[in-house]
Image (cartoon, rainbow, N blue to C red):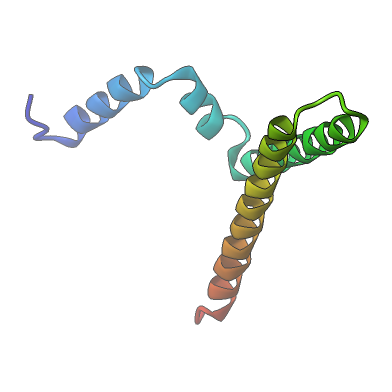
Length: 101
C-alpha cells in the first residue's frame, strides 16, 4: 500500500507501533529519557553488587573462578557502558550550551 498522504502514513505508523514488542514499547514509552537513564543506572548498580557477591563467594570457596571472572567481566562492561553514556550526555549538553541563540 503506497503512503501517498499524511493520513495513510499516520495510520501505517500506528499499526506498526501496535505490533512492537511489549519490552520495546515499555522501554521507550514509560517515563521517557530520564526514567530510562535511571533504570540503566539501577541495573549497573545491581550488576556491580552481583560481582561483589561473586567475588566474596569465590574467596570463601563457594564459587568457581569462572563464575567470578564472568561476574566481574559483566560488571566491568556495565561500568564502561555507563561511563560512555555519561560522556555522551555531557558532550550533548556542552554542544547545546555552545549553540547560538
